Length: 374
Image (cartoon, rainbow, N blue to C red; front, top):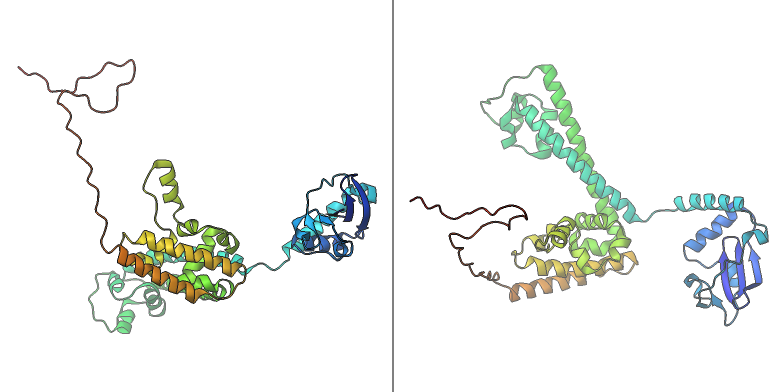
């Protein structure tokens, strides 16, 4: 006997004779059936399935492996029309099932991915707005860029406005080469600087949010590479689940897809690291050690992502110790850069030899040697 679950009920089937021995039909309520199907999609065992279990029974899907050994069976002969379930009812059930699944709480990594992408968009807007503000206010006080940067630059303009007020705030006494601004022009520039300040505030809030969510969703990844870089790895991978299924070599090269495809298609040098190059351990190392260090870090990140996704314990300290030990071994093993291989120089071509690609068929060859001027 094999236990088979269809969208309209649970059936105990005789596989050899292709007949139903026992069955338990669901009630003909779209919402009730959809609730049961949602549990099935989550991998849970329904009460109707447990009640029909018996000794030496086989099951039709691995989800029910706790009730019996899984075995394939063709259950196409069990038709809903034979039990009074119409196609119209199935359509309503599927609509209700879609509503139930879309209302389910999402995992934290989905919000982390969106927050990282929002942070990237915010940084891009900050860069564009800051560049425009420097050009605009630089007409009035270009020397300010030497004494204030980024958020402080925008804050001085938004709060003080005029060149004289900004110099008083910085305790400066300069003779600026900038031109004078009318009051209406200065008000517009100050408003523009205030907008830039709001973007800086939004950037800080997103970074704090990402740090908090990473501590909850991926504490082991955070302990190795930090919240910002760990969130970026999850974003590039498409989620914590996909990151946990990637091999260590793929984690190592996340963010270097263009260089990898250039290597595969055009024969260029393969990349040694992806976005993990931003980690201080990698980018502060000598160039000939970065590949080995990033490989070691990619392996530990692959382990950390699996532990975080399957809700394991905190092993970040142990992983960091392993990375530090491996980095020390690499530095001792490769203290000097590798010697470059000198390729033998090709013999110079004779004077009368043709240069360039071979001529196309049908065209006469051109003589590229020296002319006899005698």
